[in-house]
Length: 102
Length: 110
Length: 130
Image (cartoon, each protein chain N blue to C red):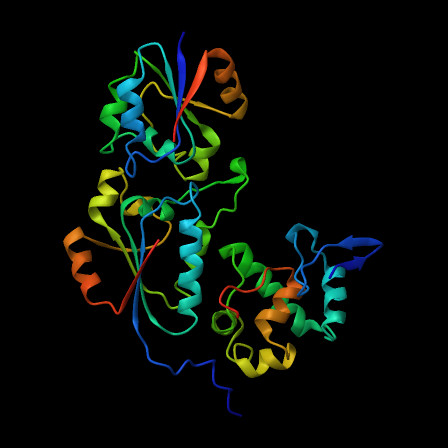
């Protein structure tokens, strides 16, 4: 059974993303939403930690939250997939359960 | 305090600022102006249109001092001064003209 | 003909610094902070605005909020100049950690180091943090 993890806090302000990545098992998925989408940026002080899990966990970010914050033109982490609200619903369905790292 | 325009009811708060900016129309502006006891002429419209453009660009209704300065910059010193603007809108150009322009109450207007 | 005096505020002028530390949409701090800055500026005070930590994200350009049903208030930072708020600073370290540079910002700012910002804080009458 694989989990969908969601992170909604900026990795520069809270440790939620690290806390999540440390515990997310291979085969699970991490979805960045709200201020969590700042963790999707490439070339930041937070990006190595999340990039290193590409391939072992699936990485997603919610597109409307990325757009709202002016990040649509910035390079995002390799392997990370942008999804919309419908895609969010699909993920919730696909995984056995959702863990929210608030 | 709602307004009635062409048989439609337009929602407004207790001070008369409309609650949904997308419900604004020239006809509505005319109706609000009547409530404010202002007889709209081209000079009034110029200020109302200026405010709508300002809001479009900055997403706020300017404080009166900022409005005066911005009007001065774009329409010249004859119009960009308090006397002129208060003559057009005696109860305060920012408050009254913003209300007619369908904008929220100016930030910094107490 | 003499112009009426513009609404001059003749109380004492104090040095106010607003320190913005939060990203724009996840919490309401950024928007509330901006409103307070605009209100204070209307009273002719000596206002400085500082963006540090996640606060630098407030002035990221290209914000497009229609997909999340929230008001995009980033254009309002461009109105600050008209409110005579001309002392606007962003912290170098905070920008760099977030992969941002001057070209990413919606308004011109003076970029200062953390040490320089600390110095500036020491000279204020009042510091308000959001």
